[in-house]
Length: 277
Image: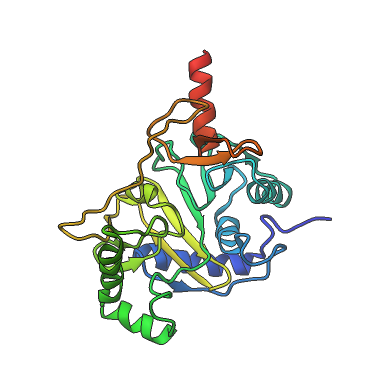
């Protein structure tokens, strides 16, 4: 069987590229688009896949990660999908990739200006859990009225003594639009600020795109007396010894023995290779 390059037809790619240009021109603004049926169910990254398909060229090198890992079912199958329908080179090395599709993490390795990061987004509307009416959330964005979110964060402080949101932590992009950073851990939020790489977000089920252009100011919401803080661990990665990366807690036997390892498998592998060299 033969496929159109990168699976989608050329008219659909043009439609997606026009929407992406608008998203880049208005950082953080949610742009509607005509989401297409893909050969996998919603929730498996159909928005990110469509954005990737619209951008991918024959000379691109594609990397796909899921929660930071290159070897999960989601990452492996999306990587195989594009290798089959576009014939592009794929890699597990962040530094070698020109286009990176990600689910819920930003690589630990610093990104460059010639790289594009595409996020899979399940829920693009940061106010959805606070205001279910779509018309009302659009009005709040138009008025830049984000008091609801500040009240939610304040209620966290009143109940727990600190802001308890650990992932999908809301950010203000370019001082204007409240934006969901996709459900990345708040550990990754500082990487959004003034990133040299273009960051694109695709939500297939919700039919929305948005973008954070290179070197854009991205501010995590906080209060003067409760500044934004990222997660910290008392442990180091038991494979590479890193004490600065985002760690996953893994149960390794039936007795409940736990170990902490880097979420980013490429970063962890590179560090172990350097130690052994």
